[in-house]
Structures are given as C-alpha cells and as structure tokens.
Image (cartoon, rainbow, N blue to C red; front, side, top):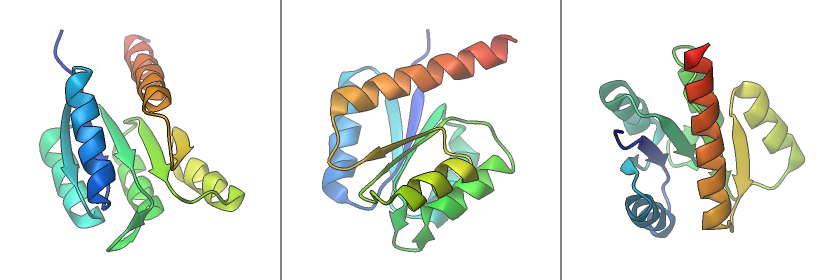
Length: 127
C-alpha cells in the first residue's frame, strides 16, 4: 500500500516541523508550505490525500483556501488553528472543512482524525 500524502499549510515553523516529524514517524508522506498561494500550487502539482490547514496565514484567511479547494476537489481538510471562536468553527465547516481542531492540540487525536477522514475518503471512492 502506498503511503498517504498529507499537505500541511502552516506558517508557524515549530508546528509545521512537529507535524512533518510526526507524519514521517507514523508512515505518512508530507509536503508543506506557509501560505495560500503556495498551498494551491502545491495542491495542484502533488494531489495530496488530505490537507491540514491553519486559518491564520500571512497572505489571507485559510477559509478562502477551503472555498477554492471545494470548487475542484472533495479532499479531506482538517483545520488546525488557534481560533477557538464558535463562529470561526462554524464558518470553516460551512465553507467545506471536514474537521476542526484547536491549538494546542494532541498529536494522537490529530492522527486519529486523519485516519478517520482517510477511511471516509476511501469508503466514498468505493461507492
């Protein structure tokens, strides 16, 4: 079975590094970038299996990236952000995010959510 590719869109270098190391340890491939512009180019060129997305990016709000992705793909998107406000959660989910976690976060919980989202993606492809 091929390793799943996770795209990380995160401008906090320490969080991005933690995710990269974790994904490597748990047998995922990953690609990462720090902004929306590079995220879209990377998405189109690498065709990842899942996206981990921070909402607070230097070149705009991650919710706009969710809207752009939803125009072309059903890929699972997990928001991982410091934004705790209920309105932000609702907007991100309504824009098309599949899951939402706030920082600080549990790596084990994030991995479980990744596995759950990837299972759903596989099940949808089989239907």
